[in-house]
Length: 164
Length: 88
Image (cartoon, rainbow over all chains, first blue to last red; front, side, top):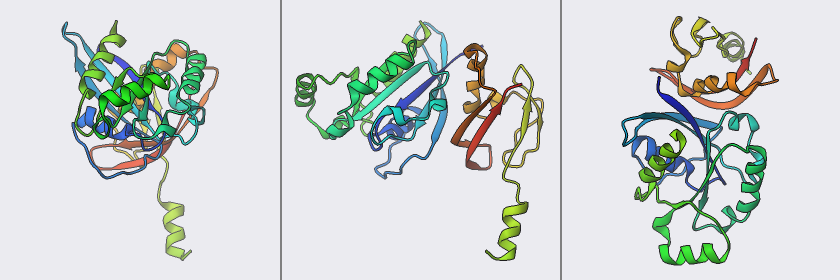
């Protein structure tokens, strides 16, 4: 039986959660922006280098406008990992990041949290890294759903962590 | 609202009820919304239902859990549905 893990994409509306979801699941990208209502769920089987397989079930949840506390608790039930996404071009999407991470850590003690800065194609990578460091804004990975930069590698690395 | 519209709302089935076995096989379904077959695993119906795999480990106190606005689909159609699990 394949190991199955539930991974939830969280973050403000408009940060590119659905674009990351579509890029990872179907290798597609669209410039058209449609607000996600509720939750889209898809599954992808990831083959690990050692031959093992992981069935990653990704939940693309509608974005919140203020805090991750606004997210329905039932959507987070049974999660194996959270991916908190922010928009590198919009400071308001990472303004409450540390509070949101603290809230998740406190309420979902066993669930690992990965932080992604998305829309890397719209900023200068070196400058944004300096800015995030100065502002004490954490990130595990900077991605571009548009160009596919770091997207597949990020999910592959997450799969490896989840299976260990 | 015109009478024929009233009829559509009243008599068009908007709810699908399914009963599952403890090993997650569809025992009964009215297939009002989605064509998911009896005697098959609910996990083959849609990845959303893989959530049920972890329910047993969660020791949920709740007997009813609601999931609003879930995008579901079968081979022919897709809909946004409110899903309620009643655990007995």
